[in-house]
Length: 171
Image (cartoon, rainbow, N blue to C red):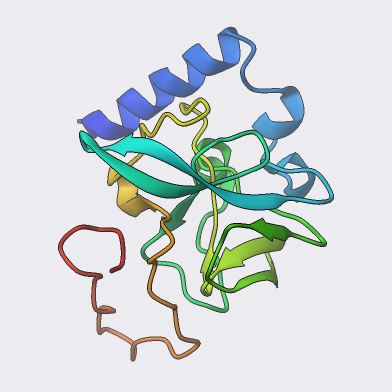
């Protein structure tokens, strides 16, 4: 039996692709097909998250940015089909506007992936500007100004990393 969330995500991707919201390049999953151009600006915007107004991080186009809980500060674990649903935000020279945390670039499997406080950032193919639809789905959570820094030390093998506080926002 297939997992309902995977089926729903596949249907959502098909709807977005049919509606013209995804290009052939972004469907390929290549680093060049990421959710940004050569220069990305990370800024803040207000959006409803779980029914509450939150200040979240967004990209140049106003799309919400997410972090993936299993990632480490030195490695993105989002590749292949997962990266097609959650395109990595990549840029050689990211800029910040109204952001208090540390913006940096991680050279990894996705190219030059933008990080915020050490967390690699992603968009979700089902989102529109200031519309958060991926919150909590497949261990992705919307990035906020208060996202706690991700340290470079990973948990020992077989031991799970501590999860952020109950809100899922990392603060």
